[in-house]
Length: 108
Image (cartoon, rainbow, N blue to C red; front, side, top):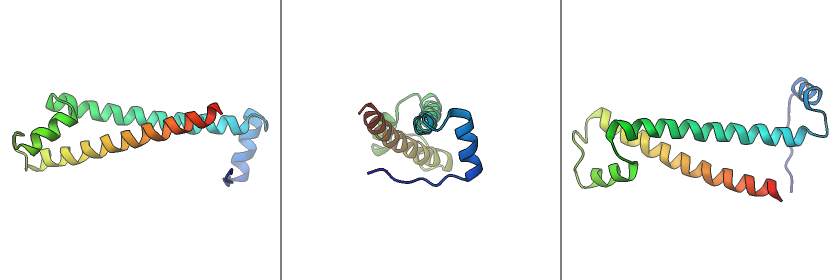
């Protein structure tokens, strides 16, 4: 069942003038998918910075963390990096799932 999305009248008018009323739904879908894909790329770039900084994937880092093999594990910088990196990995995983689901819906 479709949901209704309220759009400001001026924005709606501009979108209709730009894309035409018939193509508007597809264009909005494209814009939203593009925004999500852009966010996924951003997460991937941020994750890569941590991988380069520590020379390993988050999975490896987390395993070494649990074994006490990370130098200065409880320093502010390292602990903060762990939390941020873990959050990025979770967000990336969730976003990949959402994108996969949305792309599957669009194919129907």
